[in-house]
Image (cartoon, rainbow, N blue to C red; front, side):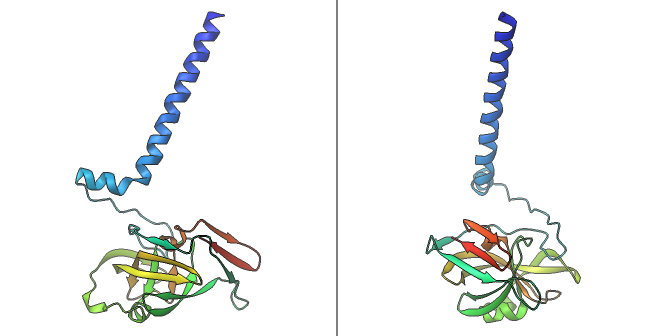
Length: 190
């Protein structure tokens, strides 16, 4: 009997240790930018899997407005995709919503519409697109608004070549409470 009790205590102790490690790991991941900064270490870049995505994902720093807002984006009858008309900084951009894209990716033309000076950008972020490998520039957008959902200080990439349309990726979508696809629409909830 004592053996069974000792075994049960060992299992409970091990489960508690694993739980503490799991919570510590989640907290460390959530606060990784602060931890890297405190340690004086540059945050390592992550590699993406999708051919249309950047090889590194920019950091996110945003302020959310209109919490509780829901935006419904109808599925395109023409191509079955979800397209969002957005205001980026002070310009208009039509995005293809791409949950597989790690970041917002702007074409050169859309970056200009957003008021970015392309000559001042540093194209030093390696990316892969359907057209092959390329270099992109990391930028911080003052605001990105889709309907009533506005996020501020969102990092994005400017892709000068090889990207046919701008992509609304996870640096925006990942900050939402919920992104839900239905047969006829995509619902964005802040």
